[in-house]
Image (cartoon, rainbow, N blue to C red; front, side, top):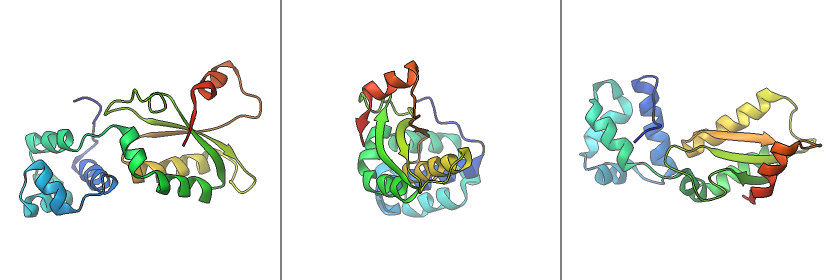
Amino acid sequence: MRGFVFDDDWDFSNWLVRRRIALGFAQDEAAALVGLPLSYFQMVENLPEVVDGDIKQRLIEKLAVRPSELLRRNRDQVLEIIAKRGYIHPRLFGSCARLQDSFDSDIDIIVTQTAAAKPGLTYLIQTEAEIENILSVPVDLVVAPVRPGVKFIKALSEAVSL
């Protein structure tokens, strides 16, 4: 399975915890799913440097889920973040909107900015990061321009309401 690249052991551990939570699993449920004793699974989440590559690969494969499924399971939380940050009319585009996403796809979301949203790229990136933290997959959050160009019009044409 491609697409899962981690900077270090702690990056993997962070992904594992976020993915388990995004899937709605308690530690014992995730441990049973991947066939590990609970104590070992807890060690993987807390002391990832002691885990060998085969176990990491097994965890990645067993917890692999299409991003559209993660979004479906956590939709209300994502909508809450978007609204709290001052954005409205969230729409999916790209592979998730077409239901052609794979395990290593990202999630593309178009939003409309209101006066309540802070202007600037930093605020948008912080919002992306908050959603990524919930879903455990990369998210591209795009603010709908006032005057969209041809490329953006194509994205809007395939966009579906979140």
